[in-house]
Image (cartoon, rainbow, N blue to C red):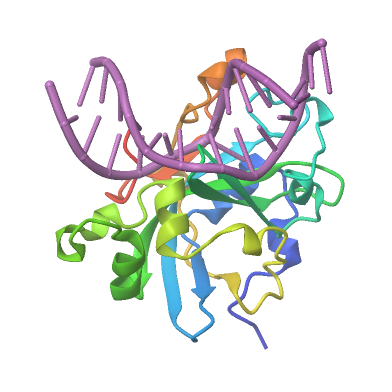
Length: 206
DNA sequence: ATGACGATTTACT
DNA sequence: GTAAATCGTCATA
């Protein structure tokens, strides 16, 4: 019998291949109260580890913060940045190979009402359009209540967060472009390591 | 012990 | 288009 949950074998690939394969899959977040929040992945960036100036593990850097990037493929690497935002990655390759894919945008699919509440701080929830819920790495983290308590979570067996098999995108539906917010990475800033669904409006703003 | 800096978002001119 | 918000992390000393 086949399960809807993606298994280890799906994640054990190089980060570029995995990033493209992640497009079209569904991220599932189960809250403590049982609420299920889901979204279809429409934008992902690949981080290539040691040689990649933009990666947190550039040069083999290994710290308490990025420890999860060294875990086996299919684990969550959640980091805190700018003093206020969380972003989620999914590890690629295998154990001791610090590569990962940053989930940058989702097309909200289930639990939109809860997402809207989680996303609305001082803003009127009714003023938040669907396209504003998960169109950015920190936005989707906020919408799905993803924080550092999920750092290091194994997506292949966690009851709190996992991936559900969806329909993969055809190659001609995938657009490649430079990664966002990594201008400090010199030549690595220009490489086309950001991938998104050409047809989706739920993309982070340029 | 200190300081510079974010794999961002939002609000404002 | 410009700038503020806001603080954990890490390199330097």
